[in-house]
Image 1 (cartoon, rainbow, N blue to C red):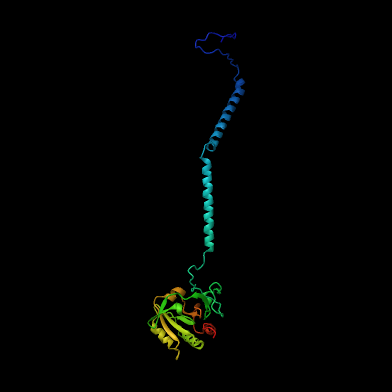
Image 2: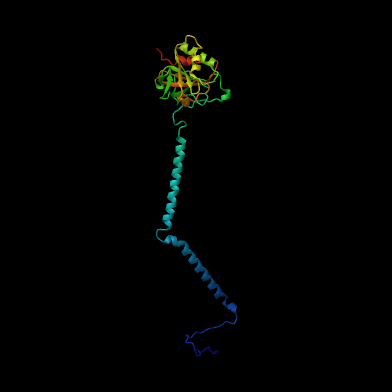
Length: 267
């Protein structure tokens, strides 16, 4: 460039330009600021494109979000089903009586169904000398041995099964039971569970002279023990319909006259 403003000779073949060089660099401040604004706007635009790219592509983000929602819904449904199933599960699914509990209420009416039987429990330390009978379904469909012959339990009606464990020290209670059953006219089966000698029960049966309605049975298969889990002297009161009431922890001073009379149907 010539100082006069006219174009000079260019040895490099570049197009002619009119360049003005300012005397002070501060005069370029606004141009520099505009340049930086353009760079920042360009970077923002590029970031926006990167964030929106998954939504602009076909079959990537939307199916992923839909799959997450489906998995969450299935998990909630399974959790609700498991919670409902645990709330509706019965306490005794096998239908067996819970003979391990001690009941304080004494039944004075005919055999009740398990759904309506009283179930007020009392601690073992405060249990009375004679525990009242409680309703307990029916006898198991199995057999015991009576006088060397098999006796099917499901055929017994209007009778008493007294489970006498070995070493229970309940001779006096067995004698009272036999006397009360004699008055009521009810047959009593003295049952020896596994570990109890039949000879011991023969001796107990002879405590009451003239008692002819007493039978001595053995339960070596622990059929009744497994079903009712007896504690001490335990009596199963079987009515005329085959329904059973259980009275356990019996000792001297028991009183079952009313319950024994209810076992036989009214004539």
